[in-house]
Length: 152
Image 1 (cartoon, rainbow, N blue to C red):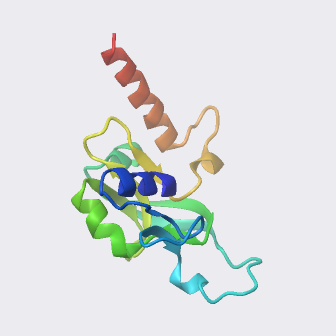
Image 2: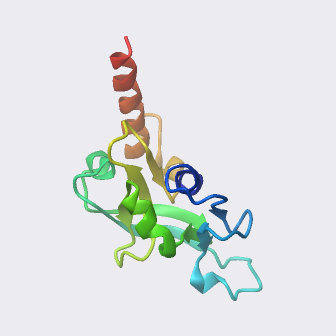
């Protein structure tokens, strides 16, 4: 999701040089370190870890995949979508379909009018199994099959 946000900011929103503060400090760090992580000197064991709640917005691809308004997903990171840029990203079509319950952290981002542009801040691979795929993986494959059918 983070790299998708960077690409969208650069090529759709016109934020030339947009990046993640994790990669390079720029005028447009659309991905930045979480505020509560900035002053930590000893990084060991201080990341946002474990299962976190995510409020899923009805009427989105994420909601269609999960069929729930509240999910829990696993994390391991210090960087998040920079809230200073959420408005400009949304004005250009980015939908923040999953957020922390307080709406402070973006967990899922998608494009409404795209066959399947959905990115998660979490690690869906950790909950996916051969016979019970993660909802986002399952619906991604379904969208790819439907897209391919339309090309014939």
